[in-house]
Length: 587
Image 1 (spheres, rainbow, N blue to C red):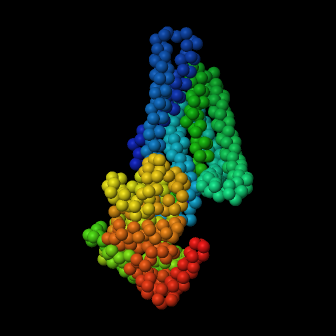
Image 2 (spheres, rainbow, N blue to C red):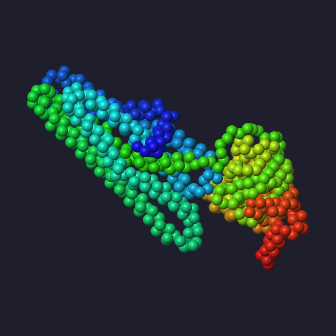
Image 3 (cartoon, rainbow, N blue to C red):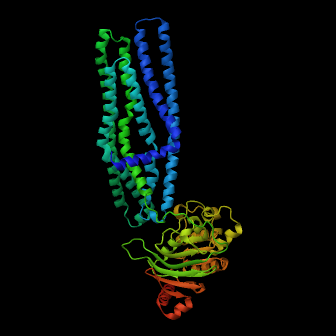
């Protein structure tokens, strides 16, 4: 077996270790269940064959008790085995989901920017579900089959060594050769099915999310036809695998029948020669047939294994991605009390070595309580600066100090506790307004909630809603307008107990008068906070202590608005153009 599949198998089996007691117990119960079934068949055959000879009831008494015992124990053991197996699966499932989610947390957000949401969903649900039953369908059947094969080989060898060799050989054919044949026929299609399932889920999620735009642009029919193609390809792969499943089931039954007939052909001469009791003829023949119950699941396990390994590789492929922030041991677990100063010196950031830097030698100081604005055209590096400050991206060169401590020497949790972010594209959950607003703080003072909603211009809007704060916003906040969503996200940021506010394009969907009103209220209500405002709108910037003008990742100008307008540089040109556009729109 190549190294890569072997390593994948070992990593998958590693998830069994936390529940190893349940694994062992369920495997032993599974083996005992099959053994009880074999014992029931053998005891019944002996009882019927012996009863034909009309012996004393005392001779049959033990066999009668044995039939009752094996019949009852088989049902009880099967029930216990199902309980233990499903408990094992649930434990493994919980371990895997927590493991995968922790990996996604480590990668988010920078490490997931190139991933499709539907494909991530498929990995987190379908691929883990594919591995959930690997114990029942692969691990347990293989161990049980091995134990039963050894046990039956030993038992039949007590009566006929040749029959033991014949039975073990046929069990090996059914338990090894047939699974290898099935795997060779289904290998490519099993892997393809996992990939097609991920692609189909990604396609569905993407198109369901963008359904409104598809309707507007009258592109639904084309997408429906493409969905039909995806579905037909996935169904064709599933049909082929089902055909292989039917083939392996038929071949398994054929081998079972061949084993029964060969046992009879082999043993009849021994019976006629008197070296074997005739009663044992039916017993051994039926035991040979019953023993195939142990190896019957193995061809299906081989078919299932490739799909499971493909799903595992998809999980490990994503989980093994290098995090955008290298793991290190933080040197400091605390920040100075009060509002920490933020000092950025010669900061540079490059997303790709083949592309120019998105931040190049950026330096500024944000003292406690200072209000700093960063403006510039699209692609200037404004949001990239926020990503660095929140440690979503690592910076290869430069220095960022928070409260006199380098960011690399602080835990991510401590860094993010110092910043309250209103992101450019914030997410609203399908919950009530109150639940979305209090996401970072469950028990919040009503006065503090009112202060935040007043500053964000939400108080009158919420008061006018029939359900008030209990109004459901819908998935992604789709029951609200763009401006309303943006103000809810802003209020949520204001409610987070952090000394430094970072507002990334918080007014992009608001009109100019409302923008000026909200910014004025915010500066008054949260005057004690430090503020880093990322914006392309120049409304209200006269209240900023300093303005940085970014272009192509570099600071081209800096100063107050009065100074920048007086210098007649880049900021003045942008400001004049925007004012002219506003006057034209007003007319």
